[in-house]
Amino acid sequence: MELPLEPDNERERIQALKDSRLLDSDKEAVFDNLTSLIKQVFDVPVVAISLIDKNQQWFKSIQGLDISATSREVSFCGHVVYQGKPLVVTNAHEDPRFYDNPLVSEEPGIAFYAGVPIRYAYRGKTYHIGTICIIDRVPRSFSADELSTLKKFAFQLEALIEMRLPAMKFEQLTKQLTKDSIELMDVENSIRNLHSLSETDLLTDLPNRRYLNRLVKEGWFNDSRQKSICLMMLDLDNFKTVNDLQGHYAGDNVLKSIAFGLNSLLRINEDHICRLGGDEFVLVTYNQDEAGIEAVANKILQYFSEIPEKPVFKGVTFSIGGCVTSNRSHSLDDLLKQADEQLYKAKKDGKNCFVYEELD
Image 1: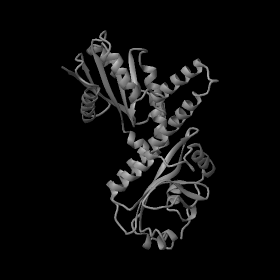
Image 2 (image 1 turned 180 degrees about the vertical axis):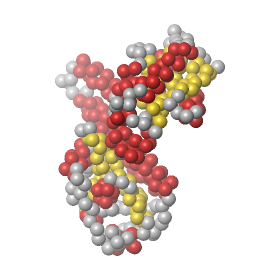
Image 3 (image 1 turned 90 degrees about the vertical axis):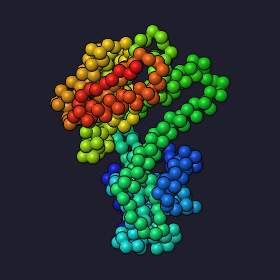
């Protein structure tokens, strides 16, 4: 049996795991719901979210087995954490690394395993703290599309973990609010801080989708002084290449630098930028004529095309699709859909360009 090795950053990785506050925590429905869904999608008997501690593998959520932990040395997931990349074992009985592993030769009789690492950001770096994995008791094949789907579930899990700590802080705050010693001003400040946190993207510090919803509702649908709205969808060109060649940590640094650059370009109280998710951003501006709209977009395109001295932006440009309307019958979803269609045209036209359309 091949034992899983420790990654070079093991000490810091363990600290990141502890910082996540997932270890030895109670069962949580949001994680159990995710593993239950994965079990249905892949039609497997066992699905688990595992956390790799110093000496053991601990399950935050598991479907199909009535256990809470195993030793790290027999874990398949320990190999995933060490490698920092997915592991697929189609037939463990014939795999020289695992055929004599007690989890294979005894209960639960693992024959097939597929696991993807879970990333967690801690003190400016990203660590693999565990995995999301599927298990079968009979050998089976696993296609590239299936692996891609499992990776997407891992990304969703990482987002849940990222949102979990602010939610826990909110719960702690509500408990504190019951104490008579808290002054009213402190309460109001805490609520404002929590509200701001809920509308902020944790990676880039830009406003998020929740803020965008409020911005458009209050600044467009509820404000008759605004005569028109322009919504632009900004998508990074070639960003997948950055992640594939340099890793997700480098990709995160690109997104942070992009966010800083966008903030430096936009006009205060006139242009509003949000991170929609992934490498997509949304810009909202009001009461702009055609020349004004094109000026905003061209300023962004020019800025990110003419800074080759910054290696973080090498090969990265923007494609921008937009829509403008003075008709308040169009919902935010309508505006986003139309801007996304124009973004697709910009990509098709060769990228690094701006395409937009006016809605009646």
